[in-house]
Image (cartoon, rainbow, N blue to C red; front, top):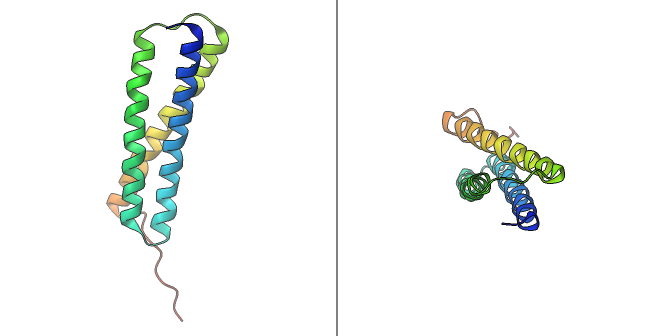
Length: 109
């Protein structure tokens, strides 16, 4: 894999991890709107995207990264987005599972 391929792979990690993060935050909005099944669907989609990122990330690391400082900077950024999104997804799953994050009660009339 040449430097251009590595750069495209890293940029793809950033994009897909960012998409997964968006699904996690959408899950919060779905819970707030009283749609827990939709929230679960969002988290499942995020999990699938993160599994793909993990596979690509491991492949990239296994192939070795050339010493291009720009590529290394992009890789660190990609890893930051990837790891924080994985953490946020697990936190959201646990908040939902424990009932700490649930739909708001209807307002009294």
